[in-house]
Length: 410
Image 1 (cartoon, rainbow, N blue to C red):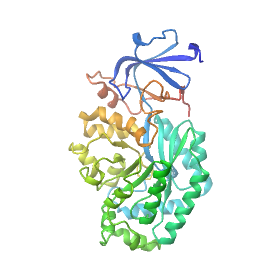
Image 2 (tube, rainbow, N blue to C red):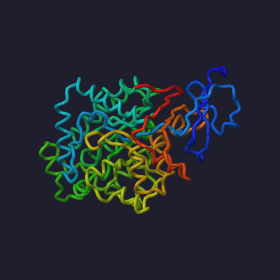
Image 3 (cartoon, helix red, strand yellow):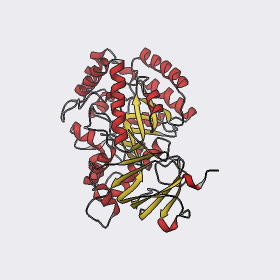
Image 4 (tube, rainbow, N blue to C red):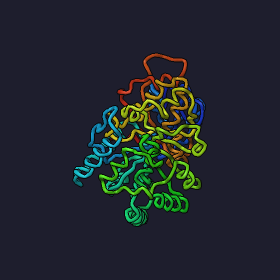
């Protein structure tokens, strides 16, 4: 049994549990790696534990960045607003082809450094190389590593599945890094490959991430139109029109029984689509802006048409975003919908943890969960709404991150 001397109490102007209402002049008590109590100072039973006072600060759960490509952390802004989607894809492919193993490791560490500095304590990363698994297991962060699968021609798809199945056997989930699967997108994954991954993920209860409706070119391709993606795939020698899924509804049908599948971007998938009405979505708001998209989930959120309960946030990669700071994604959305500040905080914390299947261990300030916390200065102006004081804070101000009960250093 741990002694009370191992306990410590953190006191702040506001504490945001996320699964409960904010607590003014609140406290979070930690013992070892875990949260043991939360409430007002007078409500904390053990008053003998040393207290750290963070006046004019807030304590929120560590941020959850649901979607990154950390291997692209050396490809600074490969896209300009208005550039064709296929031009961006070509730049990314060329970048990866020219990347040496040493440079890949350096870039991955660079991306992780940004993630850590932002106050993120849980990340979902989509990766095709092997460097992510050891690095994530060595880093003070919780994670899900989604192994990406690409294969459109019949033989490519079968080889992709064979390699993926072996990789999954060789890389078990750990107490820091869980394993997931990412069949990349409808324009790169054969229907057969979508099906076998859905079956495997259902049996083994693995999380799945799918890029969906990222560009209008994608749906045009599935419908047999003259999409720029067809010429792009033909130039790569991987166009196989008979292998495409025929609609987004077909993918929804395959993954209907997968316990935790989420769809990324969904720029051209409306929130009232009956096939995805209850699906989890992960959006990357500033990436969408960088691409110059004027509709999609950002516009639906602005107009109040998209329910936010099953939507979480990611930053995508440095190829499409100026940084990997999830708090800035939250502030970007807050500028569009200041009336949804409470929901936006949940999008950047607990909902993301639910999607990544870490919600029983982290994502909210709840006794029994890991003490994964972010301490930030509040806005210099006093507002009646504590959420406003949080989301209008200086995004450049110093942040303090606790990971499993200890201050995390970088």
